[in-house]
Image 1: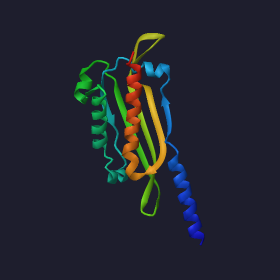
Image 2: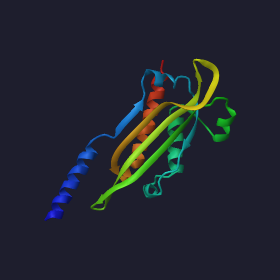
Image 3: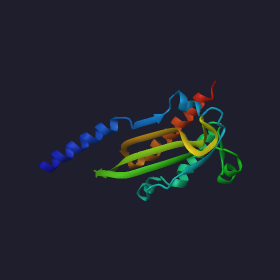
Image 4: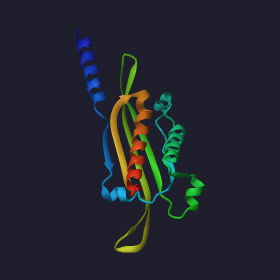
Length: 173
């Protein structure tokens, strides 16, 4: 009897968490969005993904391909690593996905998810304009949430969409 109550409570908590959108923290104010203006080419770096998430088709290579395809469809040229090094001051974007199994119930696995996207580019200090600092994050988006394992990839794609939408907004004028 006690186990059934615990299980019912656990299911209620999971359903409540799943009904909430992922927690999103984006640096997408006017200044941050302005840093996206004029960017028409990027190098994409996707960091390694937790091995456990690979069972849901979430590999670094697949995320990289999804990201590059989505950017291309949005009209943003994707630079290879070699091309990125040849283009002076080329901005680049990084994507990090963290997963940790939260619990399993009735054959479904739930994961804590963190997704971090950062646009990085060279900046100059106003007080010392000759000092160029390489790879500073000028726009970022962080998502946290709990979801089914099979939904992780769609959460990653939503985060990528947020970048693409911010880029489109900055470059629509």
